[in-house]
Image (cartoon, rainbow, N blue to C red):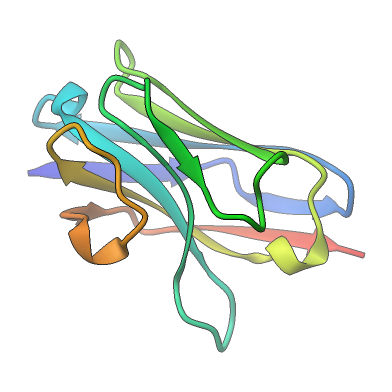
Length: 124
């Protein structure tokens, strides 16, 4: 079992920045790839970014590419999502997820563990 706890969400003005953290506990996190997903009211959950277990591989949704950066510190069992140049359309609940194995995935169906989510609200 892996437990994931997100933090760092909040209210920010358009153009601002936030850094989300996802702290993992339980099994050795270094063997898990991780991802960030988000869900806005009335919309389906969508992929944001993903990172391999080593941190060498990363992928992003086109909507956030160049603005968001996913990273991880395996010594701290933590994954981060640095969000810059935020837009009102980035408003959503952001979820951290982990999947067994080292390979990242953009598909939420391939993730085994999920956090409870953290709210990000971007005002215009």
